[in-house]
Length: 250
Image (cartoon, rainbow, N blue to C red; front, side, top):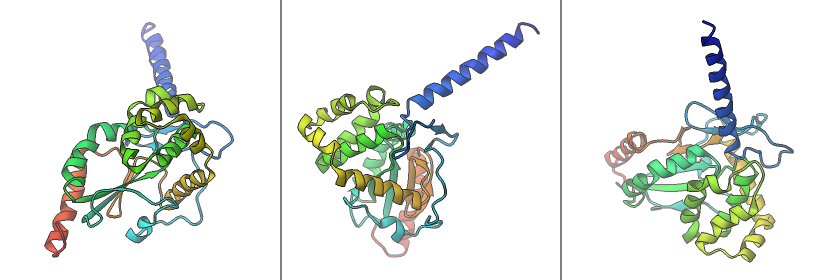
């Protein structure tokens, strides 16, 4: 019995240390907040931002029209504008679950639904932490043709640039892979119009009930987890079938 107790204590310490490591990999500082706040990792595969007071203007049951409202810079949209299903993803570039979705699901999702004209895919900014906010600025300054490449590079290489403190050199090192110059990068980081636009998209997301990433709206249906291709198919395919049955486009 005496030997078991030290083992239990050691296991508890391991759990605490692992929790600390997970929190530190997120760069969890809420944009606009004064200090660092730990990021909560929930059990349903979503990174939650630090708690914020309920917005009195929150839209409890957003309609498709509510969700369609784009930010000042327009939406980052891919696929046919006439697709029967629209998938909107709110993402943070520091979010490990957004990375998991991108690495495990996105390519199959793209081949099966976006490239075939069945889904219009929209990515929206919901930065959790100053590091994510700064990286999102850079993606908005890149040409749209480079967006998905740069977006993927930031997610896939989180270990190279994500930290509690913003590291511009590391953020630029990723952007440089797409051909962005240092002059363009520096100009981007001080572009107030883009800064304000990214903040607007996040605030709008909060009004729509987004509290963490990834959050998906699939023809208005809200899903809060890093969905697998099977889970996406289970949601999207019936929507497409219903559209076909009603006489709409396939």
